[in-house]
Image 1 (cartoon, protein in one colour):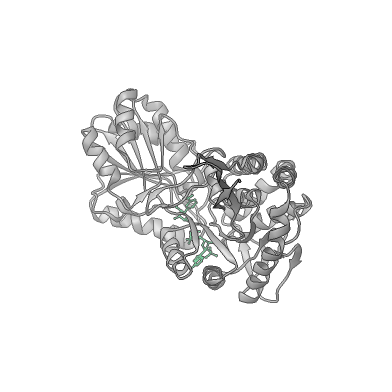
Image 2: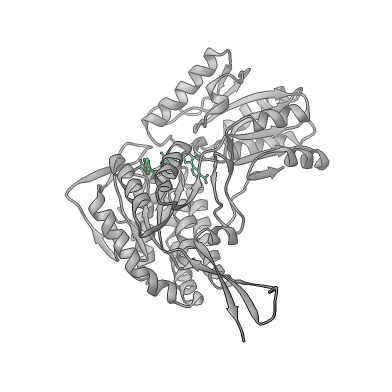
Length: 470
Ligand code: NAP
């Protein structure tokens, strides 16, 4: 493969490690095997934790601007290698190349943002209740962080954890999804080229059995101070239970069931463009993508017509694997069993892991698709008549990650925004993920936030000092 940062070994303590046991990484668009990656186990994970622990004190002792300088170099290398990283991303994950380019550019921006944030780690002075007393609050790095990332954004999920963690002074042991380890390894190779000292960033790889073993070891390891996880709510729940034994800190970025609410007063053309960009990005395999589309009564006909027209032009890649496609087909069959009508927009032959986009109407709330993450190019439309009704329906889920509203009336938008139990809400526009904002969810969509100064504080502990000054 023509890619200077391509690696198919694990990266532990600044060295590239192979194994006799490997697992294949395949291209979901073609089924072609791209690489054989080490299928590591407990011994290698332990070695990575020890390396991260040994690297922690000297890394945390650097001046914040010195750590920032390493991050700046890493960011510059990601930007310089953006095209080859984007090609790698598309080949192992399947999203269209323009989406991969956006993801890689965003990741370079995230690393740069945290490079600068490293030196803005201000503490606080609390006014004392008596003379000769100084009350000081500092933010200090936690130590070794175990990071676990999913396959749907294999570049940005890595940088969103590693950049704030190492900017804060922590060191990291990361395990990417077995579906997409190559992007994480390429990023580690660029971190190595940036001169980031050995042991600060470690990337271990493992197949499905190894993923559970990694989680168990990290949650029970006394040297690991935090588990930073992005993935499904089901696995987040397991990790939180395991981490409970040691009261270990957890950061959980989990699943979503986003409502996308369109009022008849909205610019419907713009609303449908936003819906397509949001719902069908990454073939619908996005935690913040519209999962339930609520359309005000009377506007459904026009919305569906516009959606059908515009979907013919949309660029939609394959799903990640066979199980993902089967899950989408199951949800579709279940909604049709409950009386939903499906309109399939034929764009490709639906072969292999590709799926034609589907618009569903008349879906009752009893159908599984109302409650579960679809993670595929299926758009279920529900109609509503009043503001109160749509707020209740939108909140009727265990999730609370992202929500969207399109309306021609700002006051109406503000009433709906106030009523939604979601960590992030978009009004008349859809992008939400910027490096400086708090990305994350309420309810069972997670704990903590990634991005901005909130994201860096997640990797720090509060240390309070009461000092007699006499
Ligand atoms: P997943 O099955 O939960 O896997 C996520 C990661 O956890 C992968 O690295 C996986 O490894 C690993 N894993 C699986 N079982 C584990 C266990 N018992 N202990 C420790 N680690 C384990 O999720 P996914 O299918 O990769 O990703 C899709 C999910 O992520 C969706 O629910 C989506 O909404 C969510 N997500 C959320 C956000 C957010 O910011 N809130 C962002 C992106 C995605 P293997 O893949 O090797 O099994």
